[in-house]
Figure 1 (cartoon, rainbow, N blue to C red):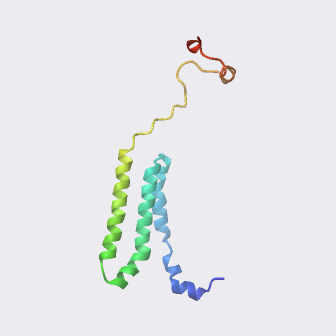
Figure 2 (cartoon, rainbow, N blue to C red):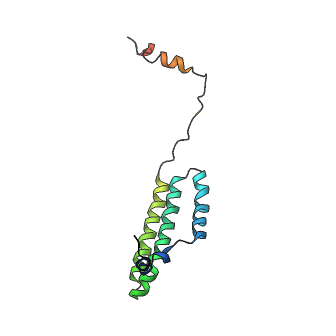
Figure 3 (cartoon, rainbow, N blue to C red):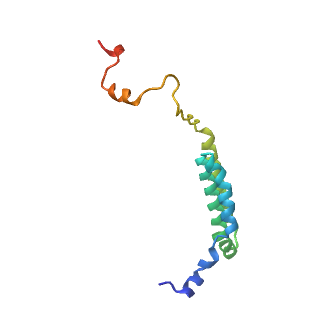
Length: 125
């Protein structure tokens, strides 16, 4: 199915992610996952893939072209996306805190189900 020589020629085995970088990614992501900060988790994931994309692809590409123009374009576009993402995090309105416990007297769910079709006295004519 896969020819080993062809895979070696493509460099598939040279593009493996070191396990310490994966552990570093998980350790950086875990506290924000536990605090339910999804947008920050998305930013960390983006920055990790941005870094890996640079380490895997751009090192050989830059050495083959001899120019710094692709590096500058890649870096500026990646940093611009991260800055715009951080700006949107701070401009979003804060989400309301969940209120799981009702204040006041407890309401029986059976009474609520029975009184669904009744019109309140204030709305009756």
